[in-house]
Image (cartoon, rainbow, N blue to C red):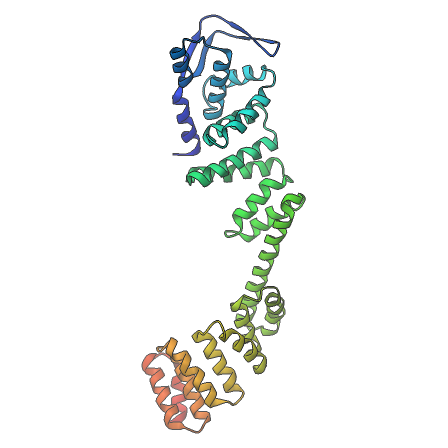
Length: 354
């Protein structure tokens, strides 16, 4: 079931009565003639009329036409009902009043009223208020068909009014975890409204930081550690809790042979993040500085997290080799090959020993 079908079901609560001849009614000192024909009446209203022996009123007919427009705008006589409602004085004020009356206790009915209001006057503020009501209804019901309608309505409103901040902001929020380019596109359009500007700028800054971080990681993997650090250091300053950024900064410093600076970041990381990657990196930097015994300790700790990792085992073997302990070096190179027969680095070290 889609959004239209969901609300169209409300039309089933309407009963059509036939005016056999034109009916003249007076509303707010304005005379309106309803031509003969079929008019919708809410079934509950008819029951109430019958039970209380009241007469059918113009209000009953007006509410019925509003309901049709709000829940089934493709109904064959909808255009006729719309033209009739437009002749009624203060009809927009009446609809706005009904929306306010119903939005807390009968949100679905409030949406029907605002659907009708937009048929009468599709100004952007009314369209946006309808979206707000749909958002509230979605939060209460979690109906996926509402989410689809909200998204399409926001896009439509943005297409109609490019610089209208509200729909642009909410579309920007929607795309935050889906498409950064689309998120930026819409969020930038919402900066012209102080109600959304601060939050929109926060989102844009966050996206910029994430994209900068991602670019830094790519640069590091491509072999450009200095360029990566130019992006990573400002990112870490602005996002001190991004542990991954600190890790990649340490890797970059190691590749630049600045082992002490790398260890500074790694020891800071180790206070909150003891992983095999961090421990292995500490071991590598200590080994490059010539502290082979200390390096072995960290490699052994890393190995407890990942005992099958042949590269860590090989690192231990290299440290023993640098300590002139060829027996242990051979032992660890052989162990690495047992864990991973395709480890060519371990095989090369072992061949060098032999």
